[in-house]
Image (cartoon, rainbow, N blue to C red; front, side):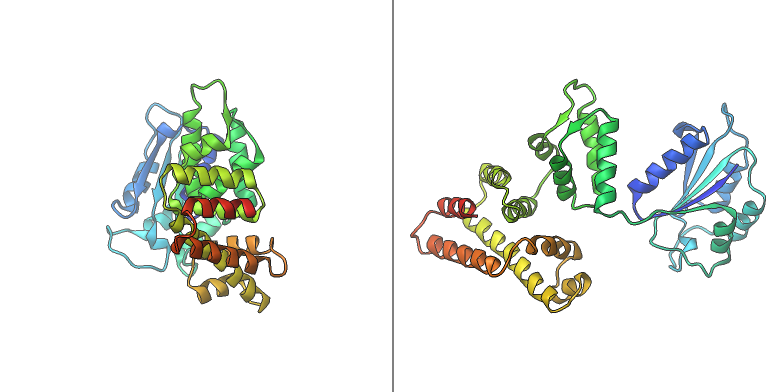
Length: 320
């Protein structure tokens, strides 16, 4: 049978690929044994894959965290890498060996890595982009008989910060929720109940809704924040910080700077910069400046006692 090498730091994508390979080889998950190379030796895993399967036609052995394929050094059991090289020359005729390397890349100078690239099905999973994740989420929901609107799936991506592993976990939770529910419709309201959100997440959603001129969504997020008894003045400050970030990104983009450079210049996570770049493009001329001035005036009104904080926040949202 075959040997497969999967290179991907995304556990969810790797798990999907492993499940796919098991189906392809007609092996059930119960007939797969895992070996963690941080605690067990490669010799143990190879002895297992060369042993006859029990009550099955074939079995799979999964090698996890093979750090010896990278350039990093770490403490662990004593691995005989030559044994792996020998196995690749004469693999099991019955069983399947799957190696999952959860790293960005391997050390291709190493003899064993060169052998894996030649002697195994070498699968390097591409870093998912927003469109890959959107399609993946839609397929998972549709495959489970769950109906939804595109806007709901986009909200799910925002709530999981377009992180493949976080998205995978939330999808499993959503599918489990609907197991005994004949009315399998995922609405925005239900989604926001199922996926935990911090105040920062909600402020992010609120500013995104305001930037997109989506008044209904903005008011819904605002209502949730009020239910959580968040301080309006605190929310005004956080919203102002978001719009200032949009402005800073807009200015640095105009100077010809790229996403990574802007992130380094501002000292913020590249994901925040990527989102800010998209939102900043929605504002023309001095529109962003006007929004920032409105927020500053609302802040002043509240701090000087001339206006209630909640009223100031509501007027700002309505004015957008």
